[in-house]
Length: 59
Image 1 (tube, rainbow, N blue to C red):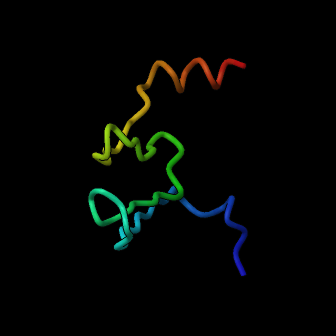
Image 2: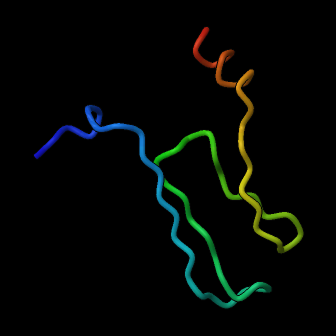
């Protein structure tokens, strides 16, 4: 079994039907720069910009 830290970066998404306004839900995993944002019942994928990542690495 390989250590997950040794694997290259990966991301995966899952959408499934559910009882909400859109009739579906979305989940993401792997890539920390992307997240699902619920904007008045509309699901969008938000991407953090490169400047945010630079500031995080400086800490």
